[in-house]
Every structure is written in C-alpha cells, then in structure tokens.
Length: 100
Image (cartoon, rainbow, N blue to C red; front, side, top):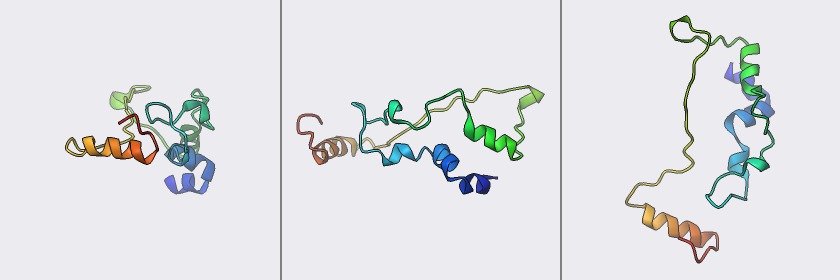
C-alpha cells in the first residue's frame, strides 16, 4: 500500500513532510513555520483518506469505533555531552554571533 502512496509524489511528500526538510527559513525556535506549509487544512486528512480508499482497514482495540493515538515530533537530538558544542557551532555557522 505504501508503494501506491510513493507513486503519488504529492501525497508521499505530504506523508513524509518533505517541505520541513527543504526550507531555508526557520522560526526563532528552529522550527518549520506553519504558514509556509503547502497543506494547512488540518481538517482534510488527505493521506489517511488515500490509504483507506486503497484498502487500509484500521482495527481498533476491543472493537471500538475509534482510537486516539498521541504522538510527538522530535526535530533534533543531541547527546548531553555534545550539546554545549553543537549549539554554538550551529549558531556560528548561521552567522548568528550573539546567540549560542
């Protein structure tokens, strides 16, 4: 099923959030700015709809009608020992001489 998704480049890019990795501008917290997203309608689950239309049949615990799945996004991971070095190097590489 994911092969079909990969064939549809637009949906694959949405599924993998490709635009978050190719942007040159980040906000003050090094995040991808939501307003730059090409898909800002959170009430239109395009990838989920595609998967269901192509045979995905979700199974929920105990035969329930739906389930909630809480997730989180980690953009970067630095080992504790390297973080004091990585932060200033990143700031300097971006020409940000005042912020570490």
